[in-house]
Image 1 (tube, rainbow, N blue to C red):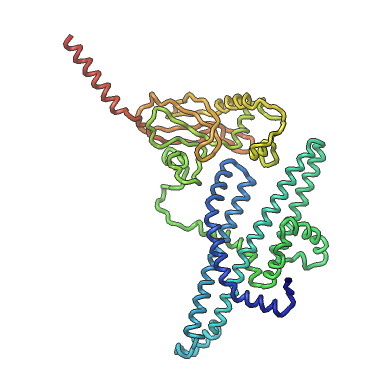
Image 2: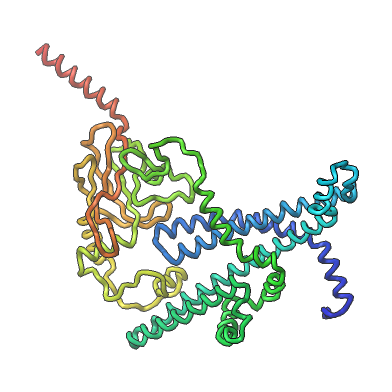
Length: 472
């Protein structure tokens, strides 16, 4: 049976639902807060992995998602707190009724002020109700805005990726088509942003409406705004609610930026946030210190600060500039077309499915990788206490699923005590410009196991030899 939204019966039903909606608000807010908090850690882990892999688009999208989750949690928690205050006010009203300013026995000056600014208790409850309903609607409106944001970026990325098919037909036509699409799409996004921040300013004037209307219609499907458009306009027709929706994100960033500068400084010279060096041992360079899933190796790592074995495994995480340095040193490894970056790759589809096999041009990947590693060995240098070491790198993944290079150094002749591992190689000062420099210095202490018993055994053997020689 259909409901006639114009009938009195349906309006009465809506009024009743509106009065009882606070219970559903609290339940939904609780589930939403729990879901957001539990998902934050997993998304943050993917974000850290993306940073290490230098996926620029992923970094941007995941950082936006993390920021949006934090804002949603703050909005929903604020809603729960104010809704709790509203419930407490309702309970107090049942016990004591309205505020009786005569019983307060204040002077006329304060009584008049409180009557004007505070007013009746029912008015206070009504304001709390309005704030709660606005915050709850804002939270879920932000979720739809977040979905729209990812849809806009996704459509742009997919379209640019598939436009590369034209490159095989005509390079010039591809560049023209790709450039035109990016210009028109970005220009349209800027108009959407101006209209959003201006609370529909482009819809108010005749000449801007003519230009903006087709863009608005196309992006209403891209952003799926046709699903939540009534909620948006019902929200925007309230002046205070409109400004809350527009300013909440900028205010969050401004408050976060300035609040990050406050804290307790414990020393004038000692910094506990610095990177690993001769004076500081950061946990991100020692594998046994990576206790959390979000802990990632920062460029290079060794197993521990204290090395008890007579060998030292070393891991160097892969970054894009390393491949540029390899190509700079050996141009024969340059591919005909650089396929790095975001795009559609058959190899990705094959690895994702595990079942589909694609016929591609055969390439001697193993042979190229072997030459690649030889060049990598030549442009990097490992030193312990300024003494060059002998090494050969292999490709690997560490326990944090970071891709990179590994090798093992022989410490058999290394004396006990503190030492410094230095990794020297090309440092990209600017795009395509490399200078040889010390990339990282990692301190470690070498105390081989059973070394004391071995020394004692050597001493006993020496004494027995001396005694035997004396009696000969």
